[in-house]
Length: 373
Image 1: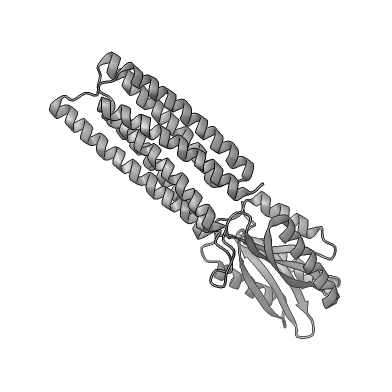
Image 2: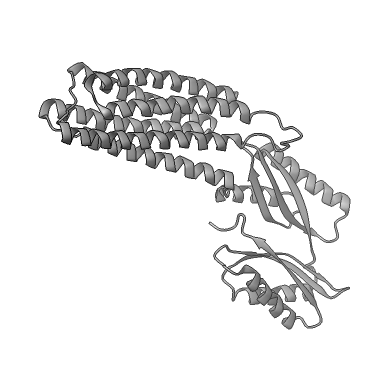
């Protein structure tokens, strides 16, 4: 299955469906003088534009990497979301503005929208069409793992709820003669604005760089730890460059007595695992581990006793004692809850030196890229 073709095909269905809704709703809104129906039509028009932008963004994001952009163009999908968010916010702002104007006009001139029964039927049919579009987009989005399509599907289902509110306003105006038009328009506009800010927030978060799901990180570490010769997996960092396009790095612990040839074989296995199963280009760093002698084990136990006093320390790794130059090296992962991680590291380093007289202690500060919930 070609993911790009599926997204484009689904988006074309959305364009056709939304253009159909725009034509019908705009006609009914203009004839009835209903601002809420017209704004509902505008919302459907922005949905059609969103599908067009999705198609363009999908085509651009699948361009091959080149000299200027060696990581590829996958992140264009996030920029596409930003444009869609801007359209949604514009539609929401216009809905609120026009609705306020309608309320002012109603109180000043006593204007009231008029609806025919066929108008109510048309809007009811439009709601059914919108629900069908929403379910179709959501199903396709889940099938091909497209966040854009899943979001569009949920947006369409929310739109059907808003259209239902518009339908209620039409019925109230026709059969009860009560003006609710402008108020419903404001409610619709505010809901659209809320959706727009939600899309904007998600897009910005992706551009800044989201943390991968913890379950995904745990699964990768478990797979790497299964490889023969790996004594531990640490410092896993993943960067997303679009759908299934990741670049990352990881450190592994190995026995200090392994040869370069043996270490390279382990590194190759990890690189192939990450590329074939997780679509990730992975760089592997090496920690030599020497916990075979009692002296090193005792030093590590003493350090563990020290860091237990610091609740923001999440992990220690890369521990190595070099008896030839009398040095102790290890890395500490510090939680983001610690506002002064460098100070915490320095305190632990000094305590380690006091407990190991004559040894130089080197402690590396590692950020919490993947450990915490």
